[in-house]
Length: 363
Image (cartoon, rainbow, N blue to C red; front, top):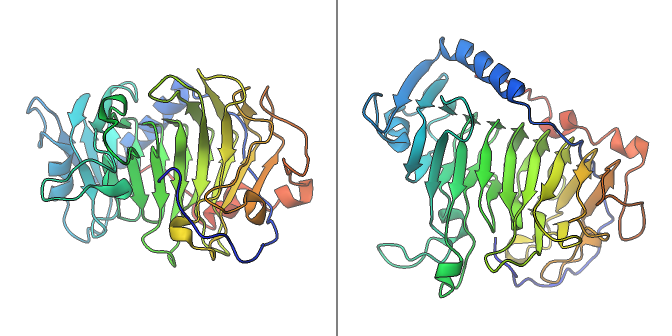
């Protein structure tokens, strides 16, 4: 997502809806091991394709394995990726649903998919990639899962100051029922793009037991997304300064946006330098109604005392931003600049409300 984005000022103010978000989480190795064991049991009944750089698997690249998945496959295909660093671009197209990409190492750090495109990176045929096109891994297929691996964009912003646009996406999803379980998503600006296939389509994403790392608008998009029991790690910018924004939702009206629940916000950055979020009216679309709720979450002192801010002429107070029962040095009491949900409002802002009948399970 661009920073800043040029947008027309809204013609009207909408009343603020109520949001809720989560609790800090302890990312235990035991939880990851249990999840991996459960997946292994289910994977035995699914088609499994193996990837290994040394040739000991069926494929040497993750994309080659994705290419081998039949179009419109009716059941789960597990792509088991052996430990290593896979410097490649991966795209799971919309006609290949029910795909799981799973690292087979003992740690989510053992298997890494990484590339370094940015929005302003020149394309071989002319032009640039744009923000969405910069993604290291792009998922456009429903019922996708990723587990026990790292997805990264290591674009060198300092070395490429001549580029106009520095947004560099690690993972882009534009699908429904996406389950990101026990992974690391790492970048700087625009790390994790949680989108939908189109403005009028639902795109639910559940991020659990994971780490998301970045500095500017690094969880963004129009998906209905939950970040649950995870760690959001704040990162300094390329020049060593501390300043940034976590969430930049671009939620369609009458949909739910981002819910951060039972999680932890931390990082080696200066105190009072990061906003929880701001409203992204993509393309200056005043019909959007961005939503972000942070609840039951541990906030470090990096979080500003006024944690929400405007974006490109759109006031956060016209949209849906709120907290509920957060704690830690960065938490604060309710005020006109820091809205909190009531208990009754929070009861309608639970993880299950976001998932709307979908129960993510490892497969």
